[in-house]
Image 1 (cartoon, rainbow, N blue to C red):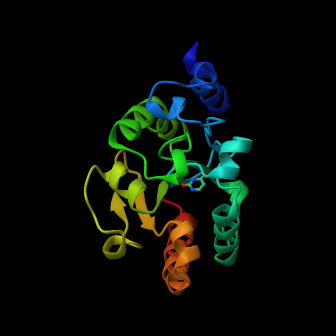
Image 2: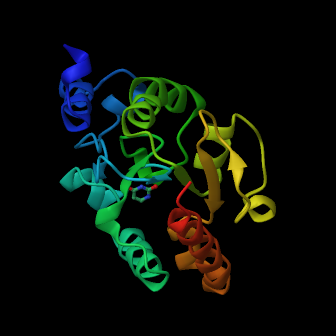
Image 3: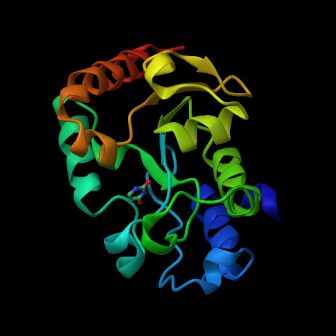
Length: 194
Ligand code: URA
């Protein structure tokens, strides 16, 4: 019975029927692997990016390419360990040439996966990496530059703290300190006990 399944079992059951997902156009546009997400199923922090890149598409794991390594370094600088969190992206399949995912792809994929992943994991804090994650999760059109580092109310008592996407930081190194400040704020919230 569902009540007795562990979080990992629930996540596995969510992913299993969609290993070769074709529910949205991305499934037929040259993608290799569906990148479901990975990490600590009891995580208090859930990091959400935009879409898998080339390395992620080939290996089926999130944030393992250049942006992922950059993100890991930034997290380590503020004392957040990658193995303490859960990490995924808004859409689970790589868009052709890394283009921005389209509204239909986002709505199909988030209803299938992401919203269920959030319900299963029940994080205290979501960190939206970049404007696609921010605006999808908040159902709004907010400026990442204006709201980065601001704790927003997501739902069910979950805080959403946005910061820049690591791929953007790789191209705009002058914003790295802002992002480190956002991650340090998240670290502070995580260390509060309620
Ligand atoms: N960018 C993302 O948003 N997700 C990944 O998994 C890799 C790069």
